[in-house]
Image (cartoon, rainbow, N blue to C red; front, side):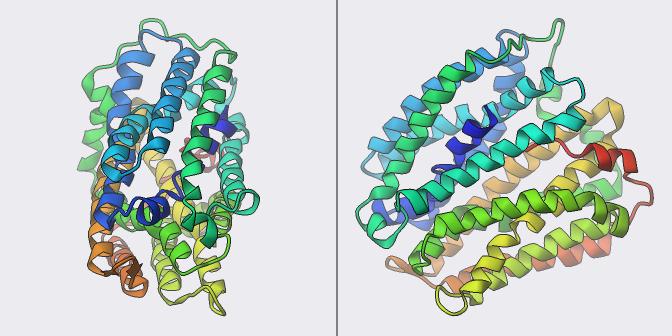
Length: 405
């Protein structure tokens, strides 16, 4: 289940910017609009899960229905000939897909006696699925090669996602029964994590909360334009090489407990933010020739960028919330980052990319220096305003790990 769930997402999300720019003639603003469908899906997701799955339907059946409907929408996006026709199908698809991330977690948790011990071993197969999708695009099919892009082969990624959606949709009906929990009621505050707003009275948590939103702006540049940048400068097998980022994510996940216990929560979060600035400097000055190693290092830093800030941040949120607000606090952070933060980030990234476009080509060095500078500013502000909290995260909390993405 986890493998196919993230194979579907990884099969089209990484290369969509390249496809839209090269095959549908989309502008940076339009590409930003396409990627922002993820944010709208994240904003709508709590309502679908809280108002439907938690009350009326078995999670595995709803997962199956959503993926079968999603397969149709992805196929219609595959058939679209221009951005105006493509965007509505994608928006509908992502409003349905984003809730499935919570559904697969829910199905997994309900079958485990000790999720803190067992969930990571299941969730890692989602990352493997994303990696396999990227490797297939580059090294098996060659859809992201110069010839493949010219021939419009990146369109096939949406067909691949549609086929995988059918497979997961059918497979979902064979999963263990996961009925709604008896007597579970969720109001609007619980659905959006608004119960946890009281945590913002804590100055440190407020600082972390604002930084989480702001750091999503540099993150949006990577998701939205990294593949477009690498294919435009003709980096061979760009999509396959980008899977190095997911591989490093798995490795650095293992390093989080060591850093949290050795350098503390503030130090770990700062390392994550600094990695964003370094990554974009690497992108700005690297190239597809003798300086290709700078691009590879920038990709490999994804593990530090994501894990040390976002995963460590989930652990910090879990520790600060306490038993009463654990779920609400995680919902609030998810809404703030993948919803509001990424929505702002995709908008800004698209506008800045358009500012430095010359026809189909871009001044990528200047473009990448924007998120590098922004990440550096967030780093400095966070360093000055966030106070280290001794014993904020216990050894038990670190050992348990963070909730899955």
